[in-house]
Length: 118
View 1 (cartoon, rainbow, N blue to C red):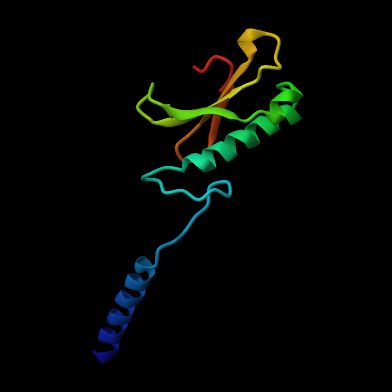
View 2 (cartoon, helix red, strand yellow):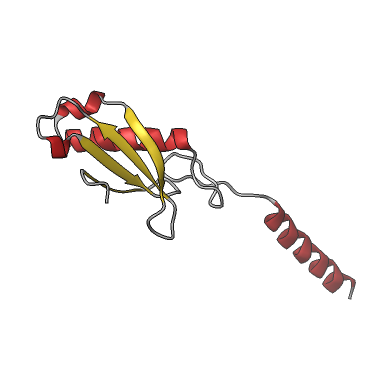
């Protein structure tokens, strides 16, 4: 009987200790809190990395690589508050292509990019 009680106590101790230790995880090397989302400065880094990727893949002009973030804000169009990062490039001749929008989820995943902001 003593062995059974000892095993039960040991089992509860192991289960409790495992649940008491918080675990950390990483989303694309950017730490986040799922309740609050990722911070604005990290969103800017992610957006700049996305612009660099688009330049490397030749989807946008090389001049975008040196452009700074013009605006950053939340997208309130849907029920999820995602981030919108805006880049403005005066070197682009076509007016409709001078503003680039990068859409990022609140946990830091790039959702897309376009020139319309929609």
